[in-house]
Image 1 (cartoon, helix red, strand yellow):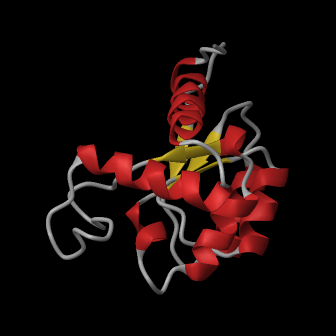
Image 2: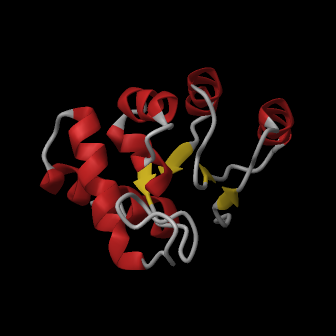
Image 3: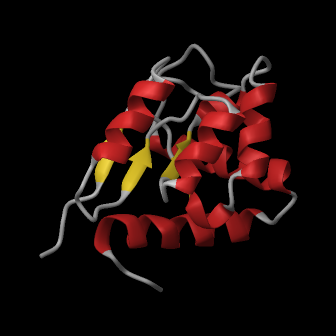
Length: 137
C-alpha cells in the first residue's frame, strides 16, 4: 500500500529530527520544509533520502551559509517554496509573501547553482510531482 509523504518543519532540532526520521519504519518520502539548517545536517538528511525545500530565506544578506547548502544539495532532491505569507524574499522582505515569489527563489537557486532558471523550474516541478504524486516524468 502507498504511504503519504511526510513534510517536516524543524528549527534548532537537527539531532531530534534525524532520530525521528531514522526510527520511521514506513517506506515513505520525507521533505524538510523551509530548510534553514547547516551543511552537515543537509548531508545527513540526503543520506536518508530526504528531499530539501528552500524558501526566500536564501535571498537574505545574512544567509550565506544557507546558500552554500543550496549549492551542495543535488537539484534532483530539491524543492522550492515561498512559505507564504511569511519570509518574503529580497527585495520584498518585511512585506507579506505570496506564491508568485517562488520565481525569485528559483532565480536565486539558478544563480547559486550556475544553471538556467528554466532548468530549476523544470526539475523542481518534476521533483514536486514525484514527491507528492509519484509521477516520474
